[in-house]
Amino acid sequence: MTTQPERLHHLLDRARRGVILPAEGEALAELVAELEARIERVRNEHTPGHDWSWKSFGCTHKGQHKAQCVGCGACHPCPTLTALDTQTAP
Ligand SMILES: [Zn+2]
Ligand SMILES: [Zn+2]
Image 1 (tube, helix red, strand yellow):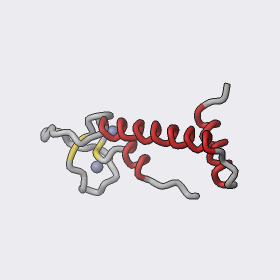
Image 2: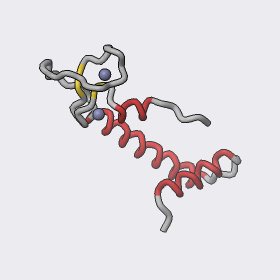
Image 3: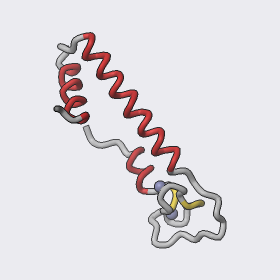
């Protein structure tokens, strides 16, 4: 039993080396689509709220925050969203 990240890693490796089979390419596309949907779900959960009585505390936005995240209660954009939008070094 291989885990999903292992499978993805394996398929990406084959794609990079240009030896990916059509069936594997399809499996890779399916995996990517599923990951995309998962990211979208997280994004939809972590939206800015509209509680105007809320005051941020100890955030790092230097006064530029406007709302509280509905998903996790942190200052929006919350650490979860920031992590999604931050590119990791290649
Ligand atoms: Zn903030
Ligand atoms: Zn959040």
